Amino acid sequence: MDLNNLNPLENIDHWEDDLIKRYPENKNEKSQKEFRDYQNSKRAETVREFYKLNHKYQSYNFVCEKENRFLQFKQGEMSLWEAVEFLNTLIDDSDPDIELDQLQHLLQTSEAIKSDGHPDWFVLTGFLHDVGKVLCLFGEPQWAVVGDTFPVGCSFSKSIVHSEYFSLNPDSTNPKYNTKLGIYKENCGLDNVKMSWGHDEYLYQIVKDYLPQEALYMIRYHSFYAQHKEQAYDYLMNDTDLKMFDWVRKFNAYDLYSKAPVPPDSQSLKPYYEDLVSKYLPNTLNF
Image 1 (cartoon, rainbow, N blue to C red):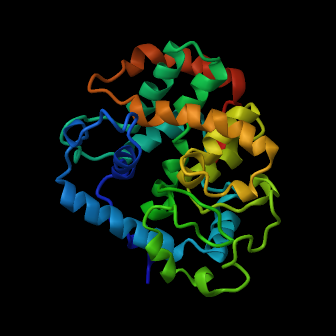
Image 2 (image 1 turned 90 degrees about the vertical axis):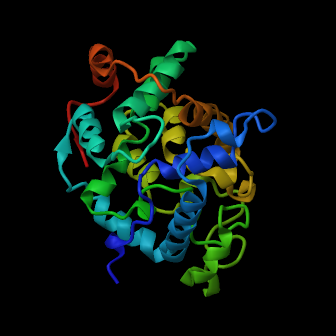
Image 3 (image 1 turned 45 degrees about the horizontal axis):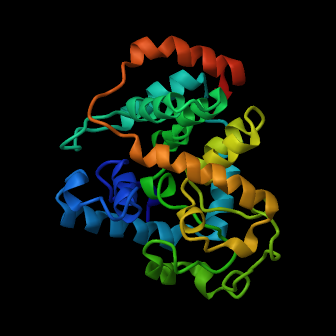
C-alpha cells in the first residue's frame, strides 16, 4: 500500500477546525453556528478516517523511519519567507466562509500576538509555527504532517482523539511499547520522548539552534493536545516541561482563535517580518 496516497482530508486546515470544536475558547458561549460549516457530517467522517490512518501507522518504527529520512534536511534550501510562500500552494478553495491561505493564517496568529505586546520572538513563533507543513509538498500524506501529536514507545492515552483506532497500531500489541512507561522512565522529560511524526517536530529540528526555549516548546508541542489540554502524560514530564507548557497553552489560544474574515495585508507587513526573521534566523534554512 502506498501510504503517500492516503489523504482523507480535503483541506489541511480541516483538522484545526475540528480542534476548535473539541476545545472551544469558552465552552459556555461557543455554539455550533459560530464554527465554519463544512457539511459537518461529512467533515466528521473525514476526520475519523484521518485519525484512523494516523493512529494505525504512527508507530515507533514509523517515526524512526521518518526522522531518518527528513532530519537529514536534504529536501532543499529556502529562506523562511520562501518556505511560507511555498506552503501557500497547499491551500484550495474548499473553505466556504473564510478564504485564508497559510500565509494569512500565520500573519493573523502573529499579529494577534504582537497586538497583545508580547516579545518579538513570540511574534516570530506565531509567524513560523506551521511552516513544517511543507512536508506535504515533499510527498508526505496529511496524516503524517498534521493531527494531534502523542508519544510513541509507550501506551497510547485514551485522552487522544479517536483513541479507539490505536488498536490497529502494531505497538499496541508489542510488550516493549504497550505499557504505561514503555521504553521510558518516569518523569524522564519530553526531550527524551519520541513524539508522533509531523510538522511540529520537523520545524523544531530545523530552528532549534536559533530561538528561545519558550518558542521551541511552542513549536514542538503545540499539537500535543493530550498533554496541554488533558494532562494525560504528566508522568513523562519533568519540571522544565511543566513550566514551559504554560507557554504552549498561551500560544495555543492565538493559534486556534485568531482567525478572522478580514485578511491581513501581507505586502505591507512583509518588511517587518523580513526584519524580524533576519534578527533570529539565517538567510536560508535547510529543509
